[in-house]
Length: 488
Image (cartoon, rainbow, N blue to C red; front, side, top):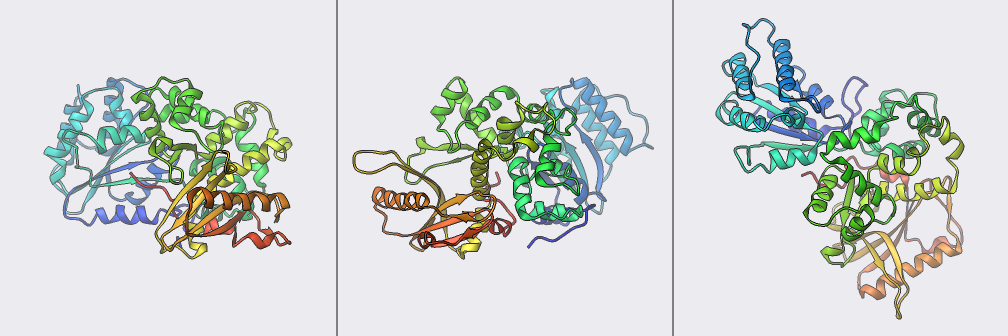
């Protein structure tokens, strides 16, 4: 279990913190790349872990010229070395790094940290920045007993220009951290650290609207329900996140309008779209550009790709998994000027439909907690979906989550979001039986099939409950600390 910290310290982040602290004890210089979407807490984490070791820190400025970025360097230089001899304003980045080398002097006995925050913005005003940084690291910093931390919200830029760089930085990065949003467990810990007592059902409601983004979560106030909190944070011109959506994508991606077009397309279909369907709905041109956009969105944790059970790679589906973006497009965009909109509309059919999809996404992200509750954490598994179109021989069906297990079993997972105990109807039973039968007939699997029901608040046992092999409630989702998402 993750440790609890007070409000001035870190919540969660144990793995990342441990790795970062280990770099201070190695015998060689380290080049650490930290990526993660805007507002996820990258800068806070780095400053907190290395607060006593940072001897130089600069943050790039968005959308400014090289001249202004160099002036930004001068201000950072003067802040960290106020008593040094006067230096001229550098005319280029090679001169700037040369000045920094002179100011840093000889290697320190105790390892120190240089922190370059929002590196993509530092480099945006000049084609020479990366070459100068490359030279700075390879010809000097690598031998100076330093941890050089480079950080940027634009995960795609960081991977293209740093991680997969074909020049001098290729394979030079010592460690890479892709900082994820808080899990449900970490979100709960964060609220406890702010002395906010909230039922888990309310935490789930908040999470489905804003995800585990620390910057959003800090707006939660004591003495409010989840409905009040969502209303106050997102609706009305005075709401703190009034213009967040446009700023979010603009800060992360060049030509961000194309990324937003893909996000809008994916928001139209809960179960996801193929690459071809995305092109059709977004009206973007075909070719390599769409592949790059999809890769960038996935690396930045806005979407997730998955290949349905026993389907070919070309049938890969892309699904919108960023909670805030989905909530914005369905409810905020057209109503953000309306004060108290959510207080009036939170119980409508449209909201209930969104809640069902958002809860499914929540379960998929916290699949490790589900596997732990099922007692199969130690078993090799593959998660996927399944769909079958109706034909002359079999009915059609869709299963949103399958857990295919190495112990010769498959969990057919059904997720139900309901405000209260969920009561299985005759229609539910017929639907579940159909899914199991169609899946078995279509795949001819010999594995044991378990119908697994995951509900938000529990199951009301009735005569129809016999079909359920395992029932889990949403407390399961708070068990595990990390998403089932791969770091890059």
